[in-house]
Amino acid sequence: MEVGIDALPLMGRGGISRHLRDLLPALVARGPGYRYHLFARVLRSGLWKRYREAADTFASPHLRWHRIFLPDRLLEFAWTNHDLVLPGTGRCLKGLDIFLATAGLAPAGAPCPIVGVVHDLVPLKFPYWFPSDAQLIRGRLEKLVARSRLLIAVSESTRRDLQDLLGVPGEKVRVVHHGIHPRFAPLSGGKIRPVLAARRVSGPFFLYVGGLGPVKNVRTLLEAFGEFRQRAASPHELLLAGDPRWAGALPSVAESLGLGGAVRFLGFVEDDELPALYAGATSVILPSWHESFGFPALEAMACGTIVLAARVGALPDLLGDAAIFFPPGAPSQLAEHMARVSTDEDLRRDLGARGRARAASFTWERAAAETLEVLREARSSDGRDCGSD
Image 1: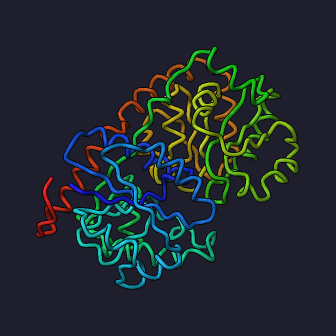
Image 2 (image 1 turned 30 degrees about the vertical axis):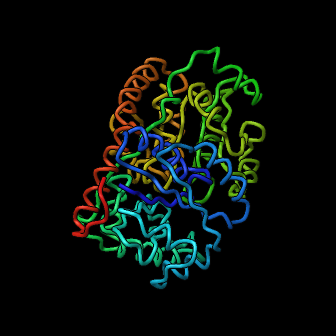
């Protein structure tokens, strides 16, 4: 089967990029019968270098790269607003049996069915935080829904949002959870200490990993950490790992709370450092107003670290009884949990074991098998002969 894939996530960072970067090798490992055509939009600013890196990383007889030398705005105009097949895309799309739309952009006029991947609908749930993008994203999602034979939602939470916010019938959506990469596992002190030393971390710390925009609710975490330090007189630091471009006023908020050097903004942390940071933390905290999946929570659990999570979105379903939950707008309650986990070794041991067991069920091998099942279902329901496996 000839499978087309929007390769844009392979050239980015964050959860959407992690999804395809870890799923693709698992798809290839499923064996013969499938060839994957990766469509790279190389005219985006700064993407040529990332394309070259991705093409070197993801090289296999089962993979074929196609460079699209067309601006994104033109693709949006042609694929989202009109049924136009543009030069440089039509020839490649013609031989496909199925197209996996991984980044919200569904090609118009594709000769075979489309399966759209929907990670979240955050701009539709919180439009006041996305004043310039909410309508554009809604239009793109509506086109993706209309053009897709089936949709893959990354959690039951996202499936519910598709139904509630876009009116998508349940029979059109299949839930396929992400996996957790094997790199996330308990580590010895000998592997943790060098990473912490390189970051000049010498004492206990809480860790946040993720975006720094308003939906992530990091301000509540800062307020909770301030209360925790007042109550516990603890030497703990709070490490925030995320793209500093979205930090906004958070450094000023930390200063105004008197946290000073106790809060450290690490910037974006690469995957080779993350396991040691997770494993070395007293707890990993997700204070978000919404999470459609929450990679950091399950990655931390796989490393044996306690997770404190807001009871929102997909987190209660995915984390179950292996995490401690709190309301996202309750810094005092979060501070109490932080104080408890910082001193209760039995609790850390118990939840650490539960978390490892919980995370072990999320594998990319399972995700790949379930994704291929959805692709085959969409293709067979099309009623057209689009080639043979």
